[in-house]
Length: 268
Image 1 (spheres, rainbow, N blue to C red):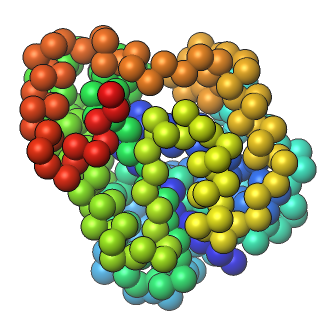
Image 2: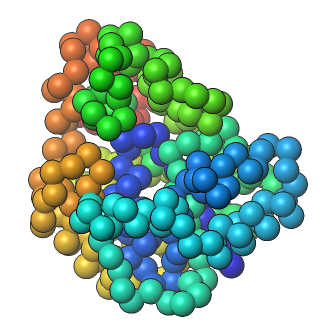
């Protein structure tokens, strides 16, 4: 069984792009197992490679409402793919949490591959602050945009601009260190040319690209379901959330990353 870890900060497009993989008959997608009831915090940095391999085998074999995101499919927020193989050859873990583990797992399991997705920080933070499902109603955006403290319950939680910088730098390190099996992608580039970027991702991950993926991409960009967790977005406005943030937040974010290696992720 092949294992791919697909990861990104919250509100970075992981839900949508994970369905590129889910559309393939040869890939089984599981959402954040270490946050599920069945496998909650069951693995740590100290676990050896054999324990991690057994964990992936257990996740692969376990049907689960949360990990399979069945509740989102029932609500029409995710598609239902009926052409799946009974025993897909690849397991894809999709996670917005546990970035503290990803590097260690890549070091321990040399056959594992990983895709990291990064979105312009203004868009990612703006989308989070304006999401009533993920940003607490009693929290103050001015106080929370940098630290994301209002959402943190443990070291596996990553919210806010400081975490965006930490995670993005981690991806850039992994891009260099694991160049053969790690791919860093930008959300805005995927929106601009989803078919091409999807093919590049599949090629890098040694996956077979099928018409199912193209069909999902076309469907997701030609229909619209208005919900923060919907993958059906007829008109992707990559600059939408930057317009919703206060100018002070926008200016502070861009001022901090301009002239640094993180500047490449500014979408202009």
